[in-house]
Amino acid sequence: MPNKNSIEQIRTCNKQTNLKRVLFDFWTEGKAESDFEEIAESLFPMQPAIDYYWTGVARAVFSAAAYRMKKDESRSIKKLLYFLLTAELDVLENYLKGTKAETLVSDRTRKNTLSIRSVISTYLTTTQPV
Image 1 (spheres, helix red, strand yellow):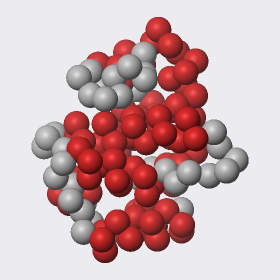
Image 2 (cartoon, rainbow, N blue to C red):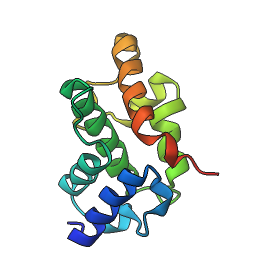
Image 3 (cartoon, rainbow, N blue to C red):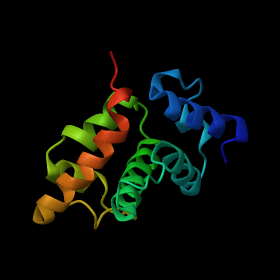
């Protein structure tokens, strides 16, 4: 489980809207799937202006993709953002197969998936590598 200082760094970073300031590798810090869910809660805080459903599914997709990428030797924020924001929907769907989020993204539910991506993008646009 990420230590409390690491989670606080994410929260502080989120408030400053710049993920690049996070001083730890959440793939190293996170051990269990629940750790990635907790990281997603910090990156995607519930906000009154956004329907809780969309924030919840954005969290689920992010945490599933990040947890899956933990085993990837060539993992990076750039690669994670590729899957979450720009990969073809069938590529994202295949990447999330077998995860809790697999039913949330699909080319068959294109509008829903694009809405989820929109929410993810809103929260994570400042994480794009320079």
